[in-house]
Image 1: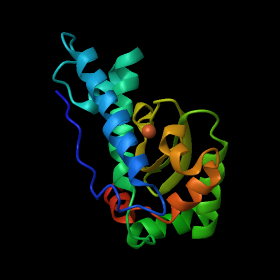
Image 2 (image 1 turned 180 degrees about the horizontal axis):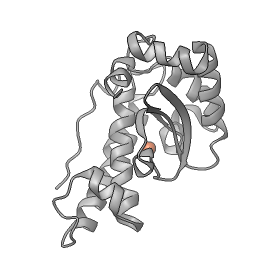
Image 3 (image 1 turned 180 degrees about the vertical axis):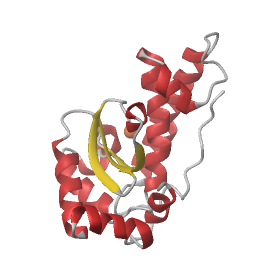
Image 4 (image 1 turned 120 degrees about the vertical axis):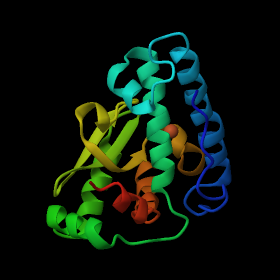
Length: 189
Ligand SMILES: [Fe+2]
């Protein structure tokens, strides 16, 4: 039985980037629905009691979609920081190694996120010392490709529409200066 995790910050902590209203709908309504649907769809199937990663790698259809959305959202909310931070340590080294400058990384990540058509996610994934920006659609995530996600942004309209309406590029720009780089670093293998 999955339960929703509390946000790792107050709902008004990201104001200027995301409003309390957006976080309330996104976390308390959208994510809660994915959690409830996952529990209901897994009930009475061989997936009941399995962990989220196993369900994501093996399930299909509605159960996959809802379980993946639980993972994606929990991951996304941990990627956000109330403080404006810069990458440091190994993650900074890898960003520079793979993108030459932090500005290049931001530009490529932004381009990918803005051009990700429809609803989906933009990820930074790691394989050894290689970092890649990957777009997925709907609920898809890198775990099914055996890639290690270290950062993601939700580009479903429900993530930003109340604050940015159709201005996804502005949302992505603000996202890039509110990344919890400590969490990103902690995801490196
Ligand atoms: Fe979302």
